[in-house]
Image (cartoon, rainbow, N blue to C red):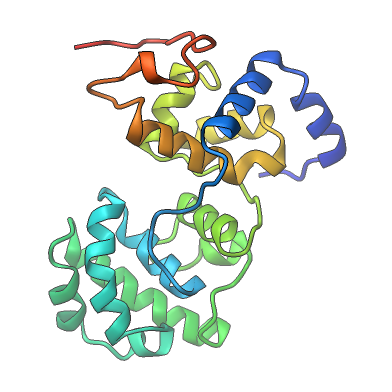
Length: 225
């Protein structure tokens, strides 16, 4: 992603009335937000985020207590066997591939970063099982660095529904959001849209009458069952 003149861009991005109204309504509805994956360190957040691919945070939070009790940091996980990790995370989808990625990621942290999670997007995405979305989660939630916008299924759907984005892929939607949303809003925007998607703007049964964005949402492509 090319470098951006943040002072100029923040001023320009803030001029869109529709975007400003959405951000204001979301702040009012969800003033305090954070990542719902349970963790006590950057390493634990990174591991939990890798596990959350194609899986709910609730299910991940059910297996990580045992995982982190046995393997609380990168050196401990690097010493684990494939079978040990698979047994713990078996309830999750794609558990074999995820176990492989977790162990390789731990080895890479030990070999390249002295067992610590780097605070660099470029270094994070070089780790096994880590793409831009996972890196953005870790950087934003743990380090407080707005490296981008986390685009999960909720953010993708609601961004299109509200007219914040029109693209079809998470990568392009993130680029759209980064050009429209002030950088200081990137981290919490994702958390708030995820909260909205889980509690009100539910894909199969949206409760539009309860939505804080009801009066300003164009409901692009909304289909009600």
